[in-house]
Amino acid sequence: MGLPRDHSDQPNLLLLGLSPAWIGDVSREPEALGVRRIAAASTAEEAVLRLAGGSPPVSHLLIQDSYVDALLPHLVDLTAGEAPAGISLVVLGAGERLINNRSALSMIFVREHCQGWLQRILAPAPAPVARQERLTVDELQEALSGARIQTRYQPIVRMHDSQPVGLEVLARLEHPVRGILQPDLFVPQIEDAGLAWPLTEAVIRRSFEDWGSGRLESFGLTLAINFPLDVLLIPEALVWLESQRKAAGLSAEHLVIELTESRPVTQIARLRQAIASLRGIGYGLAIDDVGPELRDHQALLDLQFTALKLDKELVRESPDSLIAARFLTQTIEAARAANLTIVAEGVEDGDIWQRMAALGVDQAQGFLVARPLPAAAVPLWHRDWCERFGR
Image (cartoon, rainbow, N blue to C red; front, side, top):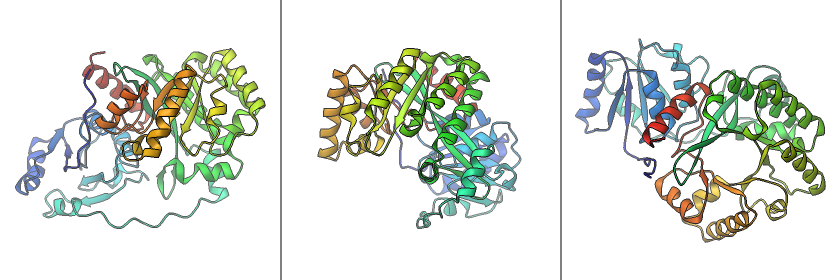
């Protein structure tokens, strides 16, 4: 079974346009400067697949200013924090209408035949901007009460045959000024403000809507949802989850509850009761983000969990850190003894994939497989992935 292809640091330009003449004109300047990694797409679907993952990464996306397609908002979303650092959304012409309050990592607007545009987009990245101010409680409450909590879906594949097996639901916040915010910019604040349950509720509603819309349910995948410990211990939250699941027509066997907790677990008895209740219904349960900082993961292994997810930083650091490598080996052995499915997050290149496979990891998740995708892009990714790996 072949591995997904690795990322590369070489400039890799992707042109999206309907006009061969436009593509030819735009290609001349990089070709004159020796840039050979230029690809063209005539549909937004092709461009989405290139950005989603699996192929060599796109360093710069250039869109013809007159291009119109229903997938364009999703294409823009894929450049708004979901792509590797350094990707630029470049709209040649009056492209502001495509953005619609979304925030790409780097936006440069130039005219079609403006000389020097390539030097601008390939110039060294500016110094990092100072960390943004914390969101106010009012902003957090407004986001949770409105439609500003969005969902992304990161695919999970089985390592021995590359078969897609699941999707993890990830939260995003669409801020009216700052654009699409990653979880580290709002989830800790929401939890500190005691709003973890409203956030979890909003994510469940959105993901169940996407599932029931037909975008996700036809693939036979599991759907993994993050539950902070405080929420998992609320009996009413579990009753509400069960009612929503039944209303959405999902089987419990297709849902995995991922326990997320950065602090020591002190209420093992209550957690055991909640887990036993969910397992009795048929839910899967995973211990999320297992790394050296999770000091009580050994105690959690004695509960009725079905999976263990290795922290992405641990996975990335394992080739260069003896401490990380030792912890990884010991944890995998303990999880295997507990008969848990082992999932590695942060699988970003072929070397990490091979290392995790050699250690006995069952499933992989990371940029090498796919970036977090809007729901509309999941069917495109799934079809392309299965075609490439003969499923």
